[in-house]
Image (cartoon, rainbow, N blue to C red):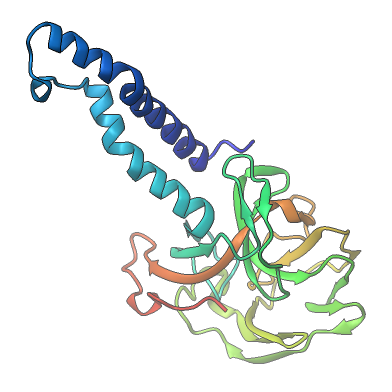
Length: 267
């Protein structure tokens, strides 16, 4: 069981629904009977404030819970680990049904719809602390032999080609990203942009992805805490939250919003 905002919504839906249901089946008939005995017309009988609030909020909370649990959930990008694809301050929508429908709070899958694909940008629950959400790119599938040597990714012994095309001059090119080199990586046919920070040392990596687990990396390769590190490690299938699909806003205070990113698809 995961105690997050979905848990709060689920509890609120349950409480308001129970109050509204009990009033409809038990309390209201009794209230009307007492009013009739006292000679009060039914339209003049006021319902308790708690029932009024429950009746008003229950459908709203239920709709929000259904949308967040089974359709789309908003997330905010809290770091630069996915630059240049995603920036700190991006607000994104995550497709919750791309990899199957899961029950809120329990997070157990009850309908299998699709499977993750190499190159997908995915939100997942950190294995060591499921209350924390991470977003990275799927690099290694179950059973893959993944190696990282000299900033180059190898999958089952095959090197993933990277074509560098100069210094990163896009938004948020400050700090560690000021001298970053950008390029295009080809993940067995799936192309996406990556960043490398020349002065950063990158440790080599060599592991086989276990069954029902996935290997993730950030697009900002030298500034990402991902599956290469024991704090994250391999991510079990049950921890997948959904596929990141679109940016709906970018605003990283005190900087001004980047209006041009609104509506951008996440590739």
